[in-house]
Amino acid sequence: MRTLTSAEPGPARSGVRREARRDLYAAGAAVLLVTAAALVGRHIQGSRHTLFVDWPPLLASWGPHLGAGTPAAVLVAIATVAYGPCVAARLPWRALLPLAFATATAWTCSLALIDGWHRGIAGRLTTRHEYLRAIDRFHDIPAALRTFVDHILLQSPDNWPAHVAGHPPGATLTFVLLDRVGLRGGGWAGMWCIVAGATACVAVLVTVRALADEALARRAAPFLVLAPAAVWMGTSADAYFTAVAAWAVALLALAVTRRSPGRAAASGLLFGLACYLSYGLTLLAPIGAVVLLLGRKGVRERPAVLVALLAGLAVVPAAFTLAGFDWWEAYHLLVTRYHQGVGGIRPYGYWVWANPACAVLVTGLATVAGLRRAGAVLVRRRGGTAGRVADVRLALLVSGALLAVLVADLSGMSKAETERIWLPFAVWLLPACAFLTGARAWLAAQAVLTLLLNHLLLTGW
Image 1 (cartoon, rainbow, N blue to C red):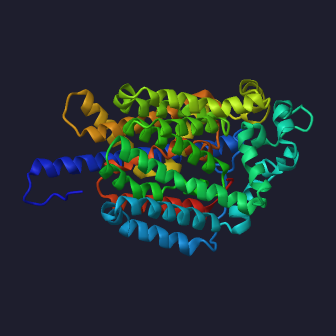
Image 2: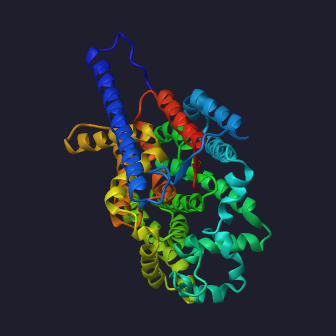
């Protein structure tokens, strides 16, 4: 981005300083929110024991530690802060995407290995609540799908582990299929989630370039790679869900901008799959709606795009329904089970504002400042002030993700643990960082926050 010199008009320099101050005010307010959530949460948990988290607002416990991944994580952070903005601005686009993927993979892996191979990667998906615990019960897949809803409630015979019951069977079925092809055990499952999750940053870059412009995508790239979200993208199944959701949106963006029914059908297929990986991914709807809004010209000029999208969207639901799984019945039973467990005890009045504090830790202070700038772009647009069309389009895309998070928060079905549950939406907030000036300083803040989180806390996911 162009740097102002002393020869340029004073009002321009003053405007840059004013915007920078406002960014810091927004970041400061976010720090206060997180601090309040931590202090109030510790009081509630200490006095009433109703939060069921040891280090609110995160599901984590205090445990300063170093690990094998520490040197690599520090090196990746330093290299990305020092060279990321320059490389992202100059590297050919086709080379930038694989580099972003490789760096995101290295960042996530190194962070996970701070906790060691077993606790950080191989053992995460083998605990009593996780998907790998149910693999042996899928030896007859059609029968398991037909009877899936019979084991959701706590009082049902052989009730599913918490995460199996809390998601449609597509989530568990993924790990069953990995096991069937020989990729058995927590190590393979963990690396599947890490590698798949790292592709999400590429999907977001592709989307931003298609809907806004390449310059904004390039400026967002280092922030997508170095996101604090990587702490939870490491060996959480939600990282895999995030990747599926992100590519569904990316393919839709390409479909509407390039008038491609084939990409639209693939997008619909992934949207359908996402809804059978997690019930909460139905909240991708606001993001998808923004993509269709921004690409409405392409849809009008080639209606086959919308037809292909809907056709693709029907495939996965039809397949599971024909196999005997009733999505709506399962969801209603899940709501009952949610309230049978800690979800029914955790106080809504605390989590409805502590969840956003959690989102601050997942996306970082740079994202908070970027969201403030995105809001300013939309306000100026409504006020009739001239602004770049690409900036407005990116701000609208980010707003779709904010709406999804707001609905999830108000629903009461996301009380705590949103550091992983909201990952599919959090990655769409990160591109707001493209609006920031002083990229290296903000990247450094992101890196420091991430390293502190991973080294001071033992996270639950």
